[in-house]
Amino acid sequence: MLKKKWMAILCMIGTIALVGCQGKTAEEKKLEQQIQESEREVGEIKKPVNFEQQTEPVVVEIVDPSTKAIIHTISPKEMDYERDVQSYTKQIEQIAKELARGNEQTAGYDKRMILDKLDDQGKVMEGSPLIVLKESELVERILEASATGGKVELPLYITESGYSFEDIPYLEEVVVASYTTYFGTTDIGRNKNIELSAEAINNVIVGSGDNFSFNTVVGPRDEANGYQPAPEIINKKVVMGIGGGICQTSSTLFNAVDQILVKFVERHHHSLDVGYVPKGRDATVSYGGLDFRFQNTSDVPFLIKANYSKNSLTVEIRTAEKYVEILKKS
Image (cartoon, rainbow, N blue to C red; front, side, top):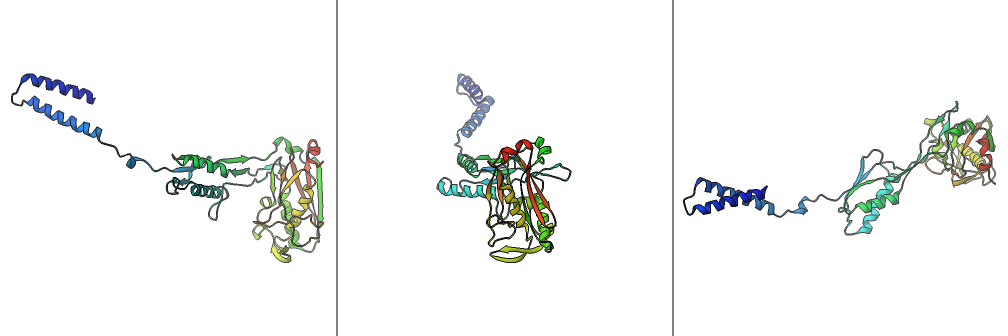
């Protein structure tokens, strides 16, 4: 467009030159005005651009892959990315750790699996999958984006329970393992705690590869959930505490699952011997602290049955008849 305009002006100049040195006509004045305007336009085009002022600051936005919401924004420049990469990396590692595991203010993305369970009618009460935020992968993604900026999605890995719904009707067919412990009938509070915790683990489905956490399955042992004061062992002393007695449930469960193919992830002993299982065969627990955890390392699912009576607790491990030999220890 500008080129055409200059060509028109040049043509007009040529025409005027032929006329000679006469007084300025209206057409000449118009031509001068057009030349001045064109010179201004060219000047604007040639004017240097200050790119520093127009460059947006580099930011890295961390995005939740399920909601697409931006959950955290990082400014590499403010965190000395260019000057000290090592220090910057440590800061990014801390951010990844808090996003995965949480802090005092917010919960992290990591979630233990809540196993499915059968209700009284044999219908599945669905739990929730295992969710793991891969911290090292998140750090790598952020470092890659730190030079130019951009969006980084959280690397979340979700694992569902390792069983098929087709197995459910057959999981009670065979008792693969069983263990019974006994208690007196006079301590009503303690017995109630055993009953409640036994009810919590009863009919839990443990699929292939699944991790069982006693604290996750049973939940808080407090008055709001019906638990009562009873004697419990803490630091080699017998004291009264809400939920005392539930360690008999966790210990009975341990002795039952120890007969099948599982890997013990976490187990602790009491600071004093207990009378309901042989020495060294206990599994003490404390909500928010010590836990009893194991993983089903077989290729088949099994069902936990907990039968409470007035003076005993029996934990059974059941599965489909076709899975018995696979589940048993060789």
